[in-house]
Image (cartoon, rainbow, N blue to C red; front, side):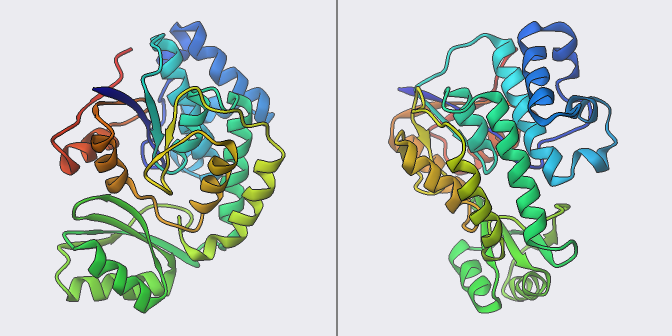
Length: 291
């Protein structure tokens, strides 16, 4: 029997997240202050007060979710379990939690990641959509035929696709024709985890070389391999790889069960990963971190 802390990605954010902790807990306040210092601006003001349109900009929301998640973890005072994992940008949060990255370095990397993603694809040229109720292999075939990619394999029957706007729109139409229950665009400012993010992958490879990443204190279950990683070079490669390839979350959770993990604790805003776990396996009990 083992436990894992998991950290969310984009979509978990809300204006005001972490504000109560900032006002009441010194450890949490120190996290937000370190992020503000690293970025040279008051990101905490945007997190706590909005507006929502500014918070959801990719370059803001990525370090914002990381900051809030780590603030929650440190406010709780609990020790790490046997493993950590994160969904997309949540991998950076997981590495920070495991001592592989400082809070400041994680914030700067995620700001660079968000900027690189937005620069790689001009506004309006990309699209990300969720497809419900369709077999992933059938959907992967549709994506291949239309020139886009599977971005997130979240759970059985919930898959996110991404790429150039016209390619994703064509794939959505084909998915509906072939029996998908729903196919709808997501409110993201950039397409994620797809081939047209190659310039962003190149930028992150350079950014990661300039940062000191330490061996994590507990293994990271990777979005790339679905297996535990501790080697720093393998971790860096996985972080670059995830820019242009899909997040294998369903497979990761199934492999967590195979590793003997019976408890998942979601650390951060929202409860997306807790909900996904219950739809993937009954061998793991998922819950939110209590603070």
